[in-house]
Structures are given as C-alpha cells and as structure tokens.
Image 1 (spheres, each protein chain N blue to C red):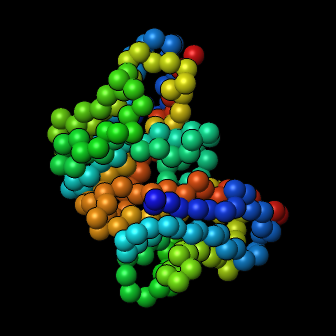
Image 2 (cartoon, each protein chain N blue to C red):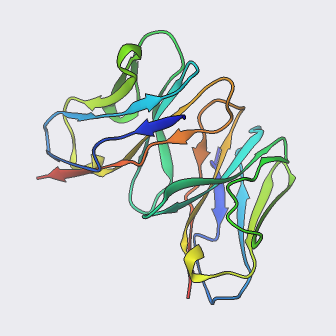
Length: 113
Length: 113
C-alpha cells in the first residue's frame, strides 16, 4: 500500500540550531515528493518538490530536501532555524499515474528561544 | 494571482442546519480538491474534480456531504444536515494538472454546535 511516514510527531529545536525532519515513503511507482508547511490557522504552503534530476532540492525559506531512493526517504533540512519556522510540516507523495497526494501525518516543529 | 480563495473563513452553525462552503480555484488550474483536517484523522481527501467533473468522491463521509463544480472558477461543498462530528477545518486546493503540487486556500473552520 502507498504510504508516507513521518516518524516524529513533535520536534523541539533551539533557535539557530540545524533541523532535519524525516519522511519515508512506500510507493510502487516513481515518486514525486513534496514538503508543505502549515502555520497555525493557515493553509498548507509548498516548501519544495522533487520530480526528477538532482536529488538535492532547494526550497523557499532556506529549506532543502534530499531524495534517497535506496532509503525511500525525502528528509527536510535547514541549517539554522528561526522562531518563525515554528509550524507543522507535512511530507506528501504522488506519481505520474496518480492524481492525489498521499500525506504524512505531519511533524510539529517547536522552537526554543 | 490571489491564490485559492475560500469563504467563509469561519462558520458556526447549529446541528441540523445546512452548511455551504465555497472555493474559487486559481485561474487555469484544472484539478480541484476538497480536504478535511482534524486532529484525530489528519488531512483527508474528500473529493477530487478534474475539468469540473467529479473523478473520485470516495472520501465523502456520508450522503449528507455533497460537492459541485458548476464551472472552472467555483466549487461548493455542502453538508446537510450538519452534525457536531463534522466540526473540522475544510480546505480547498487546486492544481494546474494531475500529479503535481496542490495550492491550498486558507481553509474554513467549521464548528457545529
């Protein structure tokens, strides 16, 4: 079955520290991968996406993610977090034979001052 | 572009009343999704339209829920009669084509008392 796993429900990071949010997927076809961010009371905003090519993709707000096919992972990273990064982050996957995004359960990022 | 526009942003209604949520997708997008988000169940796809035609409504929880897309620039999600367990945030999202990222509206927070 197609699925996306975000193993961490919550992550707490000090402001200025580096961040890595994990995403693992189980998908039969070649995956198209996405990271979204949701601030409280807001909709989901696309941070970055991977379709093909360079496995390290850059996104908005200083985020990047690396696609590792051998590990079925698409982890999100940021070298130095800011208090404004506190939000919930969602990983999602689809493919060229599917119309809908399969969503992870989300990881809530808490920033310590 | 103004993005995906949803109205109202907040709706409080009494059990048994009809509720209509509205969505204006991004111009030129031919895919439209309605999602429901709750703490317990996360993000659930309710229905998917392609070129104004409902393609998959398997996520619509009950016959009390219905959705229409009379033209490319407008969609509604109706709940009749509403129940307290329908309380959630409902998102509309649109996409330029199948298998790519979805752009989300700000959501409608529905409370049924």
